[in-house]
Length: 119
Image 1 (cartoon, rainbow, N blue to C red):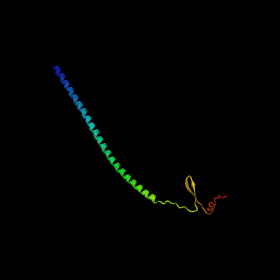
Image 2: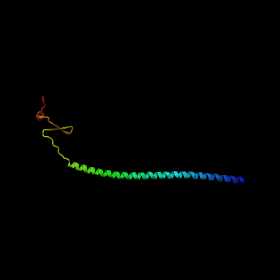
Image 3: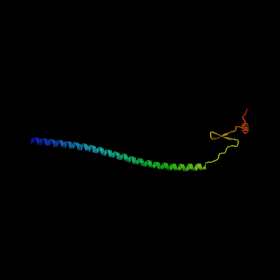
Image 4: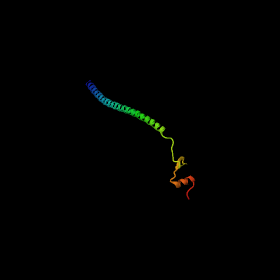
């Protein structure tokens, strides 16, 4: 009977110590989980703020793009459509582009108008 009582007390003490150890471990796990949740909340708040700033920046850039498109369209319409070249320049096509032969003096003008090469 004394042995049974000692065994019960020992078993009770062992179980109590295990429960305390498990409770302490659970407390540590809870603290770490709380820290992780707090860290994630801060990260989320940072991302929400960054997203807000980026949305403001996008709106600003869209506005500037619209202004540039309007300005470019207005400048394109106002640009002169005709080019004037002196009468003595002779145009010809080279690789799909209009190129001009430009006379350099009176002798060159005579050569160009007669379409002959000097000998």
